[in-house]
Length: 118
Image (cartoon, rainbow, N blue to C red; front, side, top):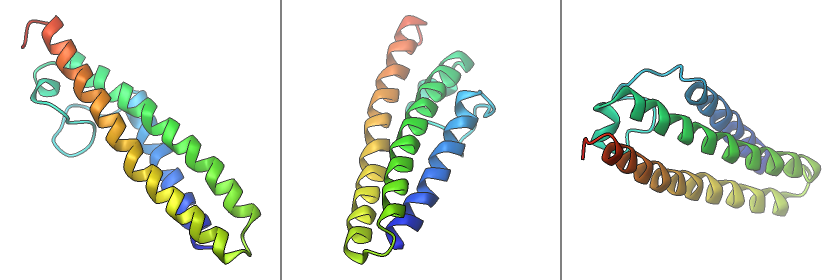
């Protein structure tokens, strides 16, 4: 049960946080969004481009977690499988955002260079 519940919570989190970013509902701020470089605050265009890309990554992570959630639901009574799904979920929720941060960081710097801010 623990694998299912954990995976479900992270799935919902990644989907909703990604949707807000994709639809550009988050204005530049220091609390929410991909604040990977000082350049995201120097241009609204860079902020929205980087956060849209990061939002897409969040949705992809959420989709992968949804698949894990559904698999965990199939094995709801198997405690060993639930532990395995828990570790898979934690692995994805750690590595997915790390890869996304690397990609959005590079995007922010490339856009800053194109705009002459770097």
